[in-house]
Amino acid sequence: MKRIAIFASGSGSNAEKIIDTLAPLAGVEVSMVLSNNYRAGVIERARRLKVPVLLFDRSTFYETSKIVQVLQSQQIDLIVLAGFMWLVPAQLVDAFPSKIVNIHPALLPKFGGKGMFGHHVHEAVMAAGETESGITIHFVNQRYDEGQIIFQASCVITNADTPDSLEAKIHDLEHAHYPAVVKQLIFNETTDNEHHLQGDFS
Ligand code: GAR
Image (cartoon, rainbow, N blue to C red):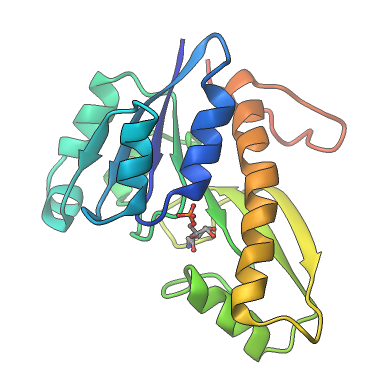
């Protein structure tokens, strides 16, 4: 059994899509959703989908090893960040090498780094006059948005777009691709286009 933990800070639409995609599959379960935000929409979604939720605060996350201990005791194989807004501490990265993935709502390495999350990203992309944006799924290291890229997909930005409409396009891309990439990582599936998805999750 492959056991997945999802970290999310906000609405949780990506978390829900991933849970929905994995739920019918044999040999995998989303064991828990973890959040730093007790008002996050993801909490209600997880409860509705019958996935246990663990809330934590900043000092627990950065100054104790409790979260690592919980993930290890739950025998988590893959950690999926789905709109998780805090930097992952070194002890967590070190405890799960190449087993933490993140989705970023732009085409890294552009528009990444501290402060580049959610709507801020789309505002920066529009302000820069970009004609395309997209999503990046990448492994997590100890720096914001700098881990090895696993997958990217792009969308066109038109003159009619606003940060809100771009955000909607990006969410559509995320929902279309993130669950599938997570599934490929879990089952170590490879395709011609994604030969780099050969992580060892055994
Ligand atoms: C997503 O667009 C995700 O890419 C972004 O937050 C949104 C969460 O949406 N993540 C970041 O900006 C991380 N730097 P959701 O809560 O509806 O899944």
